Image (tube, rainbow, N blue to C red; front, side, top):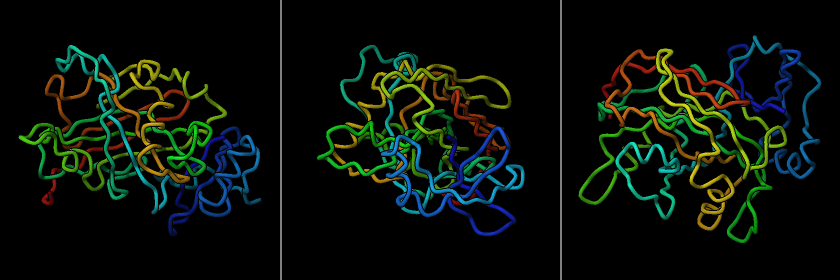
Length: 284
């Protein structure tokens, strides 16, 4: 099934909905994700408490599928061809990781904020895993806790990748309103098992394909990434885990994002995120 967060009739943001694509409608889901996601996952994706009412899909605006308490985690350096093009000759021995604040997230068709502090704003298409049941360091296996997957664009300010004490990941990854996410969550039962995902990921800038690869080329697959975080951070329903990007980013050839460009990030079988880069702002 396909799940999204939405805005209808210019009212306040509503909770998540099921998208019935064959009828081009949405049905509101009762309660917050923490209330229904664990039961949905444990029931084999059969127990989703939806309202009887249906709304035309065209009458609603889809938002980033996150709630206020969502944690957004991510890893980098997870595709070998990306690293090779950046001059690496040896594969990394451990994951590079980071946390984003919820304020960094924007949704489908939202503007990507261009912070004043950077002139090297870069795109990064990524598969994003969405958690459905709680996971703690005592959980033996985090994979059964996965609700599904969505699309992310891990926009980075590359100016801060080097420093005398290492990269400044806050300045690189945590800027307000810079990380598109969505447009929907596709539940895990509709895709291959987590350790066998073979989905094409693509990023287009003004229609030009800049990135294209398969999730099968990850150095660390989804189970390993979730296991890495499980041992460090408890995960809750709705938490998002970015799984890394591939080759073709602006850092490789200096073609960074500029004001007014349209960026489309796509993951096969999940969807396309379209966003426009805003004017370089007055706020760092």
